[in-house]
Length: 334
Figure 1 (spheres, rainbow, N blue to C red):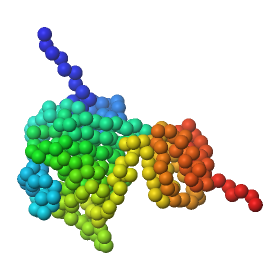
Figure 2 (tube, helix red, strand yellow; figure 1 turned 180 degrees about the vertical axis):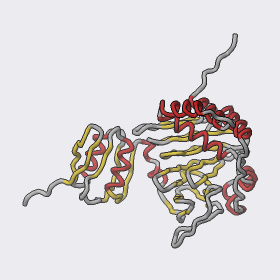
Figure 3 (cartoon, helix red, strand yellow; figure 1 turned 45 degrees about the vertical axis):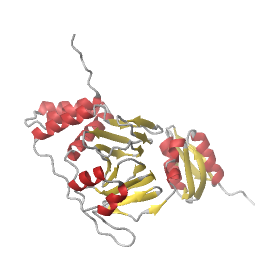
């Protein structure tokens, strides 16, 4: 009896990558590919994740392979050398072989959450990813390295120690390298923010993104920056801010269904709250950006809105089925 294995959506995305990079591609094949992308929004995300994986499949530079595999994070910081960049993947034949390896090593490598959804992912090596709402990652494991591509949103990575295989999280202009630790990576419109909960990680500009000049407290380094517990750094267009000390448990309180704020502007709070509701939350023009301090439970949209209404003089008004706008409360007549 022949065993038939059903293809996963990730397998299909990888198949399309191979077909489109195999040399002669007919117009009908391209039209079929466009139709497949249009079938489901996730198909485009899966395909882009495979494409990103192909760009990253070239081996990690010599410094990372030798230093991260042999040394702990503190020694790595002392002996860090400038990275040499990645060697590009050459030719369609190499790409076909690489994508086959990617699928073989990681047949279910794409994970995503919708708005107001969180997910915990257990990986084969015992590591875990706590994926926040509206987030997506692509996972690729091989015998030499463990690579996670964060494409959107935010994740907390609880890394199982493996000195022979560094754990690398790539997000836009930043790469975070760890052996055994726990840290958060968050993508916003312009920034990649890395926060360490336990252990230590090395953060550096992604190979290929050249250094950008900066002034003041902001610097641009090609050498990695080491972070320890409760350290945080932000990378924007290859530029790293100075390391700041934060309460990492506050930054990741969403894992326990909480958001904690200390004199945070109203619009920033509401934008964050909106990630955890099925409808959009917004603040009306003209409402002052009141500072918000306190703990918000994110399990109930009604409870979140009540908290804000009690904290500052605003009232929620349903503008449509999908949108609630916070308006200023008129002053009480004297």
